[in-house]
Length: 261
Image 1 (spheres, rainbow, N blue to C red):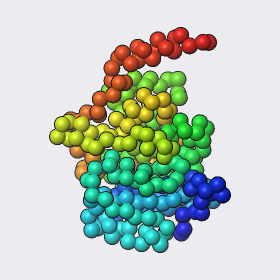
Image 2 (tube, one colour):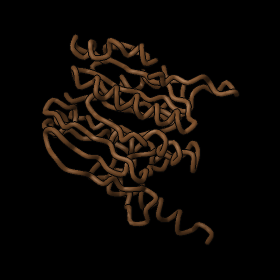
Image 3 (cartoon, helix red, strand yellow):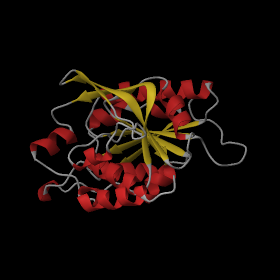
Image 4 (cartoon, helix red, strand yellow):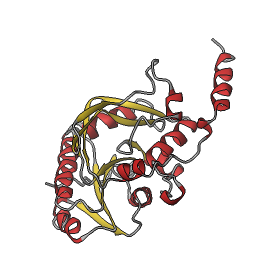
């Protein structure tokens, strides 16, 4: 199955770069790659061009072997040695040529329609929307569904992000947004982690809008060795943001109150 499509006639590159990040997932990474390839093929059938990219960060032999035939499916594989999710994602952004970038962890799965429908959501307000699935379906070490909030929903209070995270890193966003807002390095020894939470705070502060895409699902495998589990066990916090301070919300509310009707 070939998923790498020719550049657009304008020379602007593919519409989307689908990125899979691998560490120590072993054979599970092969299943995630298949999910990416299936979603890319579905996107191709709907007129989109997709680049497939895999970044292996300090990967073990079993994980590396899972992508042994990735090149046969036009998936480029790059190895780095950051041992850090955020820095591996930043490297993927540097290498990506798509207008939008969609991340997939090496043990998770997308619903087949994810790339197509997330792209459509991003195009409703180009350059400003960050797309998330409607549901995260957690499995393996746990079994539950999390319905993600939509920032555009009048019932959503973004001050929620002062105390808890709303969205993970498996989003679709314009590549330029990632370039302006790179991920931080985890600092577990200082008690800071939750790179996705930190990134969400930074992008909201910059005026980006986090939207959910109807009828899409990310199937997320919960493992005891995941970075989320490590951060929670360490009682880590996200890096500080202006949104943690009530004065930011007071100033925002005051500005909105004086806007013309």
